[in-house]
Image (cartoon, rainbow, N blue to C red; front, side, top):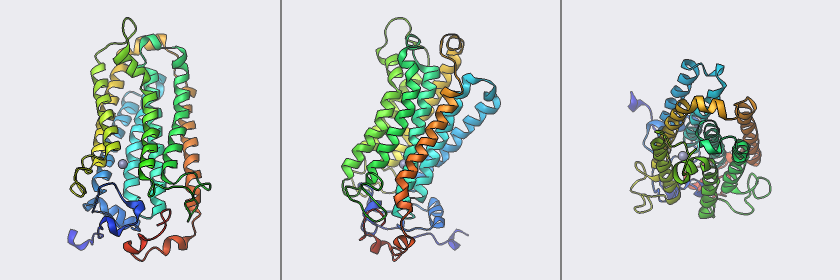
Length: 360
Ligand SMILES: [Zn+2]
């Protein structure tokens, strides 16, 4: 039966346009103008994206199962104290799902690739807000609860999601209409300045991570004396922090493939390891937060600021609306590209590689 399905051909780095190139990955590229069907078929064919897709697609269902369990078994809608946890679990489903969809359909065209990863970045920003919400509700050390920083924390985290998405999207092509249009890149693009783009992207995701973790880092590394919330959950927090550091290291360094370009094209390259470590980190983060939530519930209900619609669901909705607007603005010049711009590249992977970065 499988032999009846003709799987799409894969290409080497020299056969695809520069915009599709991955650092130190030499082979296993899909056609740069794959059809949606070819993209879906590539899930069952070994390409350099296959494990990127599966390492985020399968965990989506694990986090969805956790979210459904909390909502149905714990009847979360009746208990505002658990709303931040539900929102966090929702962001834990959305970010791997957006990533696996981006990796699946990113080979349809250059502009599809840019737009797919704009959504991926926004989903990661949304996850950073989910983390901030559960930290605000369940993880802040006792001595910081209700302080000035605690009261500003979630509003700043909402603002950070916008900054993070704007910088991460900017790292691909610059500013929409100012630096790029449907067929022109006026200032820089990821293909011309990959290190600058990578640097911007690392900053875009490291900054909200560091901000979100200020209360946790203070609690587990710096706090001394009373009010430090030194409980059994700290070990789970340490596991999460260690995996998050490893995740950032893999994203920034492109190891191990930089040491042996071409040897890890299909299995074992840094992006796959980055996905796996990120998901394991999120798993430990979820377990830690759930344990803190149960252990500290009576004290937090009595002493912490109440969880309202505005500081939970309202903040999440605002974040989604503003981030979708940012994606729309960055995508608009790409979407307004005339159809012929894309069609004229359908002459084969090699011919497409000679064309301009933004649409080829
Ligand atoms: Zn990815």
